[in-house]
Length: 283
Image 1: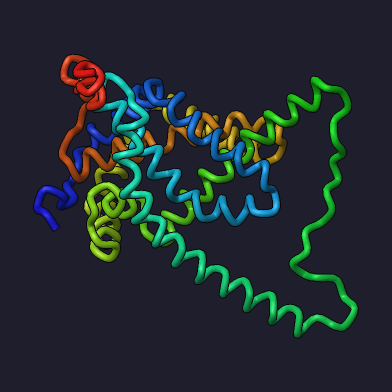
Image 2 (image 1 turned 60 degrees about the vertical axis):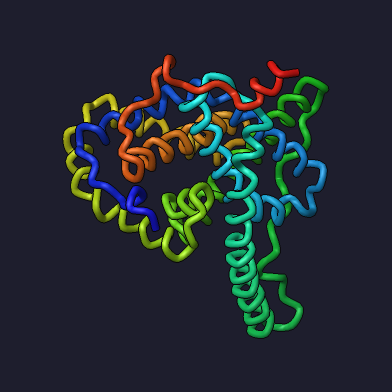
């Protein structure tokens, strides 16, 4: 592993500015992130029988896609979908292999539990893994159906992003997934250095939290309330889209400080243009 990717200890005053820097990048990357997430969620709605399986496989890769979009918003003045695909594709393939391994192990575990439950349950009893029937009926009226469709659409986005964060955090680690996908570091080494980054900066993070202003805790409480409400009612799920696009911004800012030693967003004058703009100029 290159020496430049050794995790660094970040001062607490820099960590305290992570949320504000992430918010600035969120403003520049929200529509690009949201369009990708909404497109994937919309496609999955046409295949409801496979939506859970497809979402399970794509969720971690979508997290890496969002982090790459945020990185492009930080370093480039013009967003290009062709450049995004070129940057994202190798990392998606690398992380996809890890996701398949995780899915295989998780599937075997669930299958074993289902077999054990079926052998222990008495004959004629209901399936213990069966889901309860849906109690909510379809809304009446064209406008109500349209609002319900939009709400369930964004609900799928929130579920995929938080599922991806759960899989990434429990198996590879957030920083380990970024190192493995974007830098091409092997899975074992990236996982080890990803967890080491938290250990190195635990003291600074704790100090930054102790010195955080009251406004930070108010925003954190509002975000937690929004997530809880979004999971309770489908009509508040668009709140989850805001949070689902902010979390990759915060993860990128933390990764950039810890592994790259860059503690500020790239100023507008220093941002590079799109690579494809050169080809357009030649054409």
